[in-house]
Length: 121
Length: 121
Image (tube, rainbow over all chains, first blue to last red):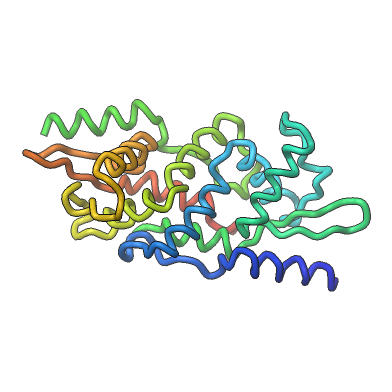
């Protein structure tokens, strides 16, 4: 449990992505907000990364072991590279349990991205 | 007016991005959907592009002349390049009126991106 908390904190410290940025319809983004936001969108700008992300997001319990999601037609090191990029962008958290690492979508970060693109009300 | 319609159609024909893809929590994305979606996120993965996009999205009437949005610290050809990328991804439409080209956010495409990231209900 303490290990899980440590991972969570390291993600928040590293990326500082929650909360991020105002809706794009609210005004011009500052340079700093534009850089943070671009990094989050960049994490989703690769087809293999998106398929891995959708596998985790749609997996039972919202969590998937790396052993569940690796057959996307690329090598294991490539899978690990993509999962690391998603984690660095703050979109996934991870926890090692025994042999395997389990990944979970960070709902607040993904919701913040959705809110940025939400239509003007 | 006929010029405007032609631009609209060419965007839809080129990108075929409306409607796009199911929510990422709904299941694993197909390869085809992942490629379409990744291209849309890629269009927003550059800080300058995001700032231009937020300027247009937040401009009065949801439309901006290229003359209104060019002072983002990069050259005019670079601005044109970024606007073209956004248009090719289906996120902007454009219309020439007299000397200037006017850009407008494509609300259905941006709403589709937001819906893809919306939390599981």
